[in-house]
Length: 228
Image (cartoon, rainbow, N blue to C red; front, top):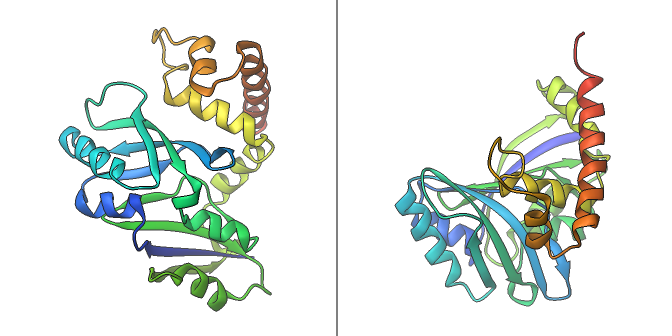
């Protein structure tokens, strides 16, 4: 298996357009896309000067595909977590294209200065040229930034630690990412499980169960790697 990184200038992509207008802001996905039918939601993190983050959000909201982009807390300082809702009928995401091809990709994609950075994992029999051609569809500019054997990636500890995160269900990852984003784990922050449930539109007991299971999986995975 190989690890391949593409740098993509997404033609008419709302994130890329806003990022190109405000190059000092970096956007990073912190949750998977969820939702049914045409309404899809996710949480992103924006980092950069306060004024630029606000400008980024204003530009991003102007896109037809963006239904809502609301900070989880007032924008202040150099970062903000934002709940994004999109209309899937108007959205042509790179992640959707990769999923349709059956290509695994790393979560936490970043966008800065108008460029999306996607890291994918391909088998020896996957056609790299065909993957790139599909990403270029619609006028996208795609640059191959990295192509190495996975065994040669000098990141063994990180890759090993990531395996237990793969044991989380999509819903557990969503609930855990939301809890982190709105400050549930911040010491003295005063954010309870009820706030997480309200943000997700789920019952408190359901959120508590997902958090408990996710926390157990994460902690057991970490303990296995601690040197006692």
